[in-house]
Image 1 (cartoon, rainbow, N blue to C red):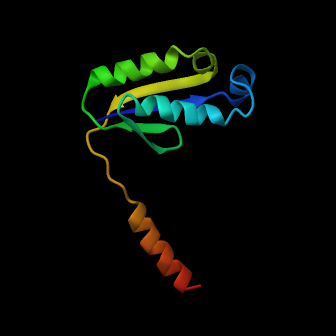
Image 2 (cartoon, rainbow, N blue to C red):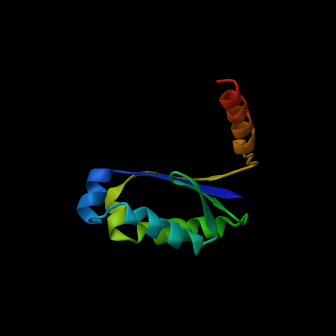
Image 3 (cartoon, rainbow, N blue to C red):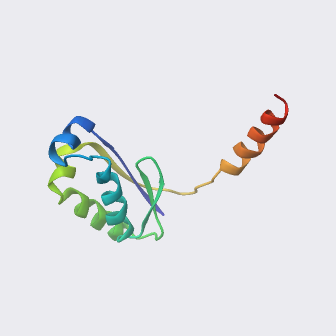
Length: 101
């Protein structure tokens, strides 16, 4: 499994993508889905495959977009050995805290 993370410069995104600039994140999500990446949170996407070629293809597709390349602060790609989702654990504890208030 591979991951892609990135951080955008919002002022540049407003300039090069335009308003509403938040739509850029939807466009990114849609593009990365075509390369087997699923949105996880924020600007973190996980691949459904273990293909490094998919990682390279996805990053190439992103950086081929002018507004993306002009607005991205950093972009990282890396291999994920194991991914554990602790959301349910946090939600169970939140429920206990709510009951004890």
